[in-house]
Length: 369
Ligand code: IPM
Ligand code: MG
Image (tube, protein in one colour):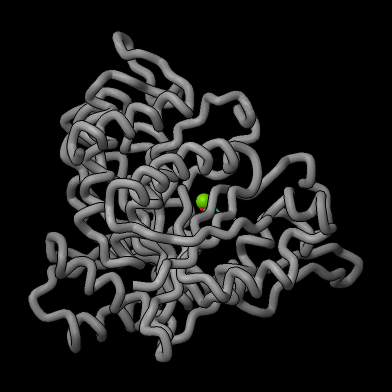
């Protein structure tokens, strides 16, 4: 089999340190499992702005397009908050999402048994939690036109448009339905049909799709504000949540905290299957962001980045067994009592980013060598 080409983009803030830790695990996989890959490194975000004056160069974008998958760290740097909109670090990430047409963002929120005590919620509310948020990623208020800023009758205004078309809603709906079939057969479609035209269309389209293609799936509609409340009240009522770009951004941060820490949540962003190569465009990133307040101190939790690598193995390279192995190793490392600061509890041992990765490697050695 030809080597996989993986684009590695550590990005800003804690991105480089969690990526370094994760690449040690990738090396372990290359050494002991059938995982051969070539890596290429690319700059995105503030790091690219500092070197090239833009958050993503056209050359890097072309390199990204030529890779089988992207493993991404984080973007964002408060020092550049005042830059012009198109130069902000986040624009690099958003350009990749749009140009690869990564419309389906999968954000699984799963509570590892050793971490039940790390959540701010009570143990019985979250123990055994396993939900999947499917966030539409290339439309809605993040991208739809018109958007911008203008002066109307002497008053400065700014606006975004939460536009969705029927095909956009259908294709994200199909992804969610397929996932629900492989999981617990339940879909919650989330919008604000009580207030927004886009929400009415979202609901109509999802319900029609459920009727025509969702046989056997348990389906419900939910308003986004209610969903936020239900997520902290009784999160285990959910299996797959499918929602738009902006609500998905908010609800996935909320779901992440159920698992104990934003530092635990991986994500996969998938596009269409390429007719020529048969590969699906795919991009893997932790949900946590660049966390500038702790960057460069070796404190960051590398597990979300590492679990994003596991998602890459599962969704891009059909290596489900290795993904399972990695996830079991994470659980075993946590069971050994090692914790980064974000998931620290009394009686555990607080360790650095690298030591957390080291604990995962020790677990991998125990499980599979
Ligand atoms: C996320 C992040 C991004 C988003 C930012 C960094 C642009 O919050 O992936 O959830 O808003 O989509
Ligand atoms: Mg977010």
